[in-house]
Length: 168
Image (cartoon, rainbow, N blue to C red; front, top):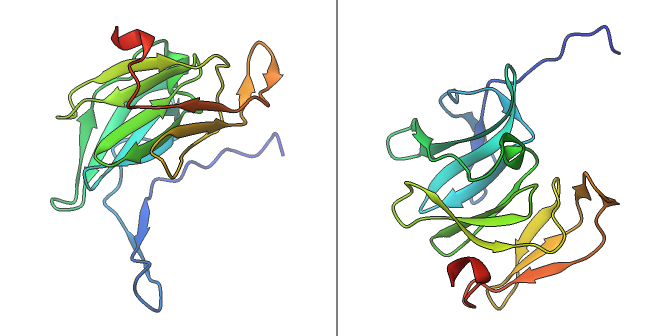
C-alpha cells in the first residue's frame, strides 16, 4: 500500500548451521540502514557493500563486521558512481573478495582491506544479479538487469588467474 510507511530493519542475525537446533542470534546493530546491498565474506569477516540508504540514495560505502571483536568498522568505498553500490553482487574465492557493480566493473578488495581495485569489465553490465564461483575457481555472472537493455540473459565468466585488461 503506497500510504504505508516503509520499515527499515536495523538488525543483523547469525546462526551456526552446524548446531541443532539452529538458533538465530542478533549481531550488534550495523551503523547503517541500507537495502539493495550485497554481502560477502572476507578473511572471516562480513562485508556489507553499497546499497540504498534510508536517507540520501545509493551509496558506495562498505562496512566490515568482525566476529572476534563484535564490532562494525567503516570499509573502503567502491570505485565508480554512487549507482555502482546499488544492486551489486559479491563473492569470495579464498581470501579474495570480489564485487560486481551496475557499471559492469569487477572489483577486488585488496589484501589489507583498504581499497577496491578494478580488475575487469563485464561485456554486459548488470545489477541485481548473481556472481557465483565455479569448481575451477572462476566467477560466473548470471541474470540481472541493465538500465540500457532490460533483462540480461548472457552468462559471463571471469578467470581471476588470467591477466585482465584493467591490470595490463
